[in-house]
Image: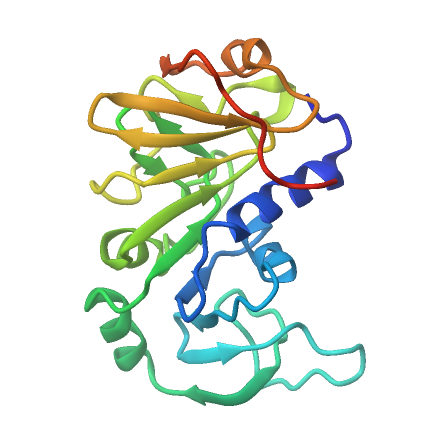
Amino acid sequence: MIQDQELAKVVIAKRVALELKDGDIVNLGIGIPTLVANYLPPKVEIFLQSENGILGMGPAPMKGYEHPNLTNAGGSPITFLPGACAFDSSVSFGLIRGGHVDATVLGALQVDEEGHLANWMIPGKMVPGMGGAMDLVTGAKKVIVAMQHVAKGNAPKVIKKCTLPLTSVRRVDLIVTDMAVIEVTEKGLLLKEVAPQTTVEEVVKFTEASLIIPDNVPVMPITL
C-alpha cells in the first residue's frame, strides 16, 4: 500500500493516462482526474472538453496570467491550446449527451459491485448538485473512475452497495485507484492489476465488494 498521498495520486493519474487514445475527446473531472493530462504517453494528443463550453483546454496558466473568463467547469483558471473553441452550454451538453465524448474520468465517493457510481452528495456538506456528472456518466463512450481506494480511516470506497445517491444508473467501465485497476464486467468486479508497492491481499483487505481474482494479477505498467 502506498503511504505517500501525493505519490498515490500520481499513480492513479499515470495509470488512467494509459487508457486514453490519440485523438480522443476527454472530459476530466475535478481533483485527481485533472492530473491525468500531465502524464499522457508520448505522441498521444487528446482534446480536453469542459461542460461549461470548451473544447481544447490547455494546462493551468502561470501565476499572474489568469483570465477571469477562462475557467473550467470547476472555476479553476485554464488556457486554450491552438484551435480551441468555446460555445454555449447547450452545444457542450449536446456533445456529451450525443455520445461524442470518448472518455470521461471522474472522481468518486463510492463505487459498488454492480459498477454504480456515487460521486456528488457529500455527507454533512452543502453541495449545489451533481453538475454535469449525470450527463457524462450516461453519455460518454467510456467511464473511468479515478479515486483513492479508501476514505479517511481506511474505510473502503469500493463497496457492496452504494449508500449515497447514485450519479447514474449506467455502470462505469473501469475503476483505477492507488491500489488497483478493477474492470466492471457482467460477472462482477475483475481485479486486472495491482499498484506498485501493493499486494493482492492488501487490495482484498481494503475492498468491501467481492472481486474476481485471476491466478496471475500483474503490476500496473507505470514507473514511479
